[in-house]
Image 1 (cartoon, one colour):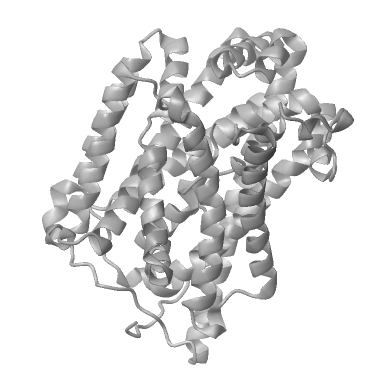
Image 2 (image 1 turned 90 degrees about the vertical axis):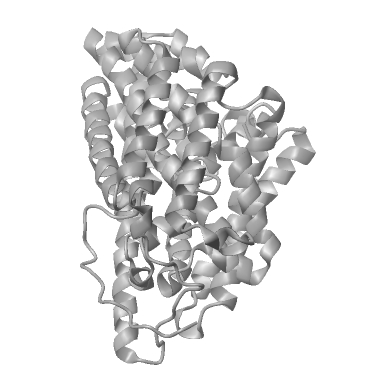
Length: 470
């Protein structure tokens, strides 16, 4: 790679950053539904598994950022350098998993509970609005980061306030201490049974962003101008595609033998470490604690919520949770709860559509023959409007989460991608980077554990129980 100067790192303590995309994608139905359901079935002590899941993802975030910050290339480019079929695996998986507008439909359904407006109408308006907004922006990343920052702030503060109103100190203490009840699997090891083990594995995988969302983070990191990403042009909206600078054919590297450059590199690593543990880990943990308290309060006021949350009827469970903590506080709180679910759907959709379009455009531009006749902004717009038009069609004529026949395949691919990207991280960071900036043995062991966990538990569930994660 050509050698370029590494820019000076900003202060490590900051409010916004590319991690806001991961928070927007990660704080979804896992935090508001899957983990409250497990707490109601097994009690708060089951939350030690959530602690492992979200902490593992924070370390993955740090290691996912390493290659992107050192080179300005995405992790997809790094995967292609190791073995090109790896990159194509992620390209195909992204299309199979993420074209379904499930997050938006769930949010629009919650909005329908508040307003009575059919979810199809709301979802379509939101989809078209996102397309128009993203296409008209000069710098997509800058605006989306700020919008998501505001929305996440509302969600975090709002759920904390509601949880404080309807929860109890005793429930909070049990929820927090449950994170350290290592080895607890419920009475008679119920969590290891055929009925619950696949759900447990899926819930741990969905403790934070799941599937390929961590990989897309490397592109948002690049567009934020982090480290060597500052030398790569930003993706612009379609209206400004003519102003897009030509993308380099490869990334850059800084001089790792220069002590001054290495000091700057340490500054950037401090910056992203703050992102990983204070913003990503902290916000995700705070939101899931709030939703757990809300679920416990709802269960006390409405006995039916326990049975519904234990079952598979997510929509009925959310209605029961709304009714339950409306009874615990005020009827207005039931409406506010659905407002939070709608907000989660909007957050996830904004982050997901941007991320999917970036990832597919990046792989297409560099690895599809003839694609360079278009610039990155045009390819971004192609995938953005493609997934929007497909989403509108599915909302009106098909199941938003995907046909039932392929749901197991999508669940398998999502968790398989997480195990696969841990393997890719080990290969890329240890083979493609200069020795002075490669990860240490502790980080490699943690990422190796992630690969064994995600892939091992996934295939064990398939072989032992005949099902994949739920």
